[in-house]
View (spheres, helix red, strand yellow):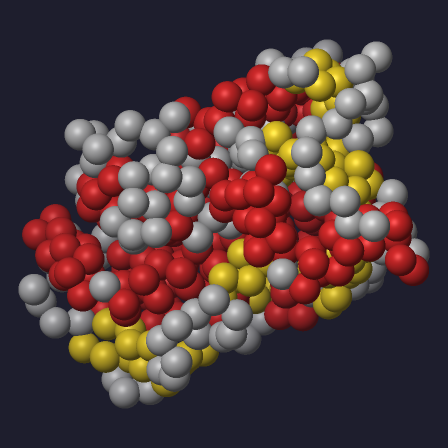
Length: 448
């Protein structure tokens, strides 16, 4: 076995220097390593031996061609499980493949298109509570909005205190806001000087009384309400057996919290970008006015809202949701002149790939038209907003639909102007977020 390593920062004992730099500025650390040491580098952080790959061909070689030799590190699986059991994001191997096949029909285009009205309904109800000239905390508003949409789509439920009394009577039940948003769930790796990761996410407490009661009622009644929970209850595995109740709970609760970070964060960056680019905002609004006008936006409009699609794609490029895709090597991989032994980690940073001038021309320019057919020439594995096959996010199409419907509905009604300092700095947490909350003033959406 060739145990020579690619170049990379030494970091001293246990890679402490690397750990300190990473904890202080994760984006800056990875940028520095890639710039100094090239497309494949190696460094130590605590007990972790890490290979950083920064080229689309290397992504394909390791994450696609050698996918069977990788798995998610236990830390990430623990974070996805939270207080609950396994689901698609924390399963591996044949069990994962079987579950993926079982889940795929739930995300077919026709099924998720049926949820478009729910997305627009919830967004318009949020906007009905806004006033011209009011300053809104867009972080908070979007977090609640996506939680409401998740409750409707997954459980046919509503959050307590939201929606109308008449509408709520049609729902399967009500979920308290604190259960939908959750409380801190933290999982750490290592102790003392080897503690490099501490993942804290919004996660409901172990009781989840209202939500679990709602799930149990649906399990008992078997009523199909057209939601994801009903699909899971009726779905059969390849050998004809339904999922066990514990498997259903683990799966549905992982889905419940999956969009609470990525979708609101993308929308924050999108409206921030519009507030800083008058020409792009004019093009976006002009297309909306031409295609939809004052009518209610429908899922059928999305194919025609071509500039809106490009705006979402560029937001996901310029402000990549994930700092890094992280995998653990479980069987030896040969890569170029190096051997990646079991137990080491492989990292790929979509943020770095998306901002590499070899992959995208003038990458520091926010330019939606780079995704026009005549301009879209980037390498296949250079654009990874939803990960990479075979573990590409199963809900990617649904997420894109949500982002476009929500952003278009808001832009139809209002123009949002950023308050405070205009320069927002991307900061890595569970997602790459702005370094402060977005306070926006609600203004009139003038017709272009």
